[in-house]
Amino acid sequence: MPLRFLTAGESHGPALQVIVEGLPAGIEIDRERVDRELRRRMGGYGRGGRMKIEKDRIEWLAGVRFGKTLGSPVAMQIANIDHANWLDAMSPMGTAPEGEAARRVTRPRPGHADLAGALKYGTHDARDVFERSSARETAARTAAGALAKQLLETVGIEVTSYTVAVADVTAPPLADDAFDALLELPDDAPMRVLDESTTQAMIDAVKTAQANRDSIGGQFEVLARGVPVGLGSHAHWDRRLDGRLGGALMSIQAVKAVSVGEGVEGAARRGSEHHDPIMHAPEKGFARPSNRAGGIEGGMSNGETIRCRGWLKPLATLPRPLDSVDLVTKKPFEAVRERTDTIPIVAAGVVGEAMVAWILADELTIKFGGDSVDELKRNFEAYRRQLEEY
Image 1 (cartoon, rainbow, N blue to C red):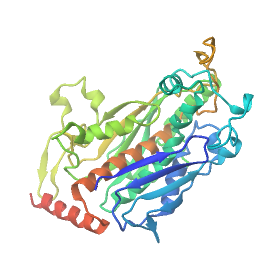
Image 2: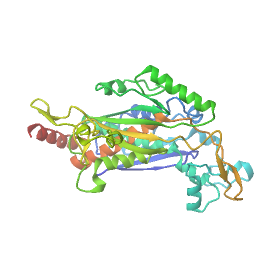
Image 3: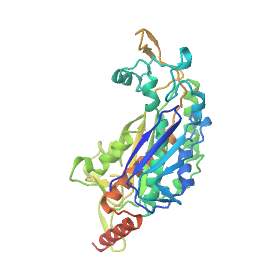
Image 4: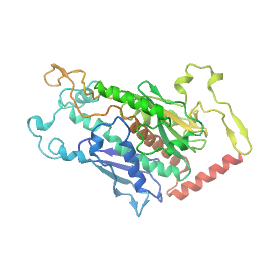
């Protein structure tokens, strides 16, 4: 059964909820690891004041008994501690307060969902829109992705990420053995990079932006190791693995571009320079000496490490706002000021991990099926033997 998840909740509402459907029965859930993913999403240098308030952790509501999935929908909830400061302005059933207490937003921020959403839904209070469009929603996605990671790990698939760039500061290329080093990075690492001098240069770029009351963008890359050949399909546009991963990463707030492998660099190369040669050895089978394709060819995984990169635009909420127009009076004003990050690049990588893990877990269940995780693993092992005997 294919996987799906739905999230609900507003940034300053009482809580975020997520319902995950399609997980096979019998997955042993490590609740501390799920909470750890939420903590990882809150970290990184350049985050704003909101992360000093929240203490994200999962309240388990349904679908898990004695630490194992039941095969029924899993329901989880993450409390918004900051809601205590918004009880009147974000009351689900109360009456809207008068004046400033309502915290109405009529001056939309360029680059945000404010204006398009207000026009689409016919509201003159953009808070009706951006409370939901806020990246706070990714906490719920991260919880769903944490479950997907634990399903993937039952068949030996691991997912991690690193920070490629902050503004114009770029990390050195990863070594072939960097995956394990990335897994070992501490959760409180200010930037998910392995080079200390690069970490400091990235921090300095953030400090410069903060001094200028501005935001900056960056790049992150997600890696998935242990993915077998054949997830995804060439047969239909909406089953191509690279297309599904690209859409999942582009759906993350503030991500404006995505590439697979060296897709961007390859556009300036000859084919003879870009494509990965194919080799075969009796003890290893088919393999590639390089991985410029990012582990995907023809819409299918090819057995190499999957690599997907996301480009994060500078955030639209600025301490020094851009020009805007009031939704009610139509007069020019500065855009609204809201609490914000300078750059949430580490968090973006963690959310990217969650989305990549989710798509891979979905493809895993599509190909190998099974009402229980033991049945899925049997099907997976049979396929692995088939590949070894090819």
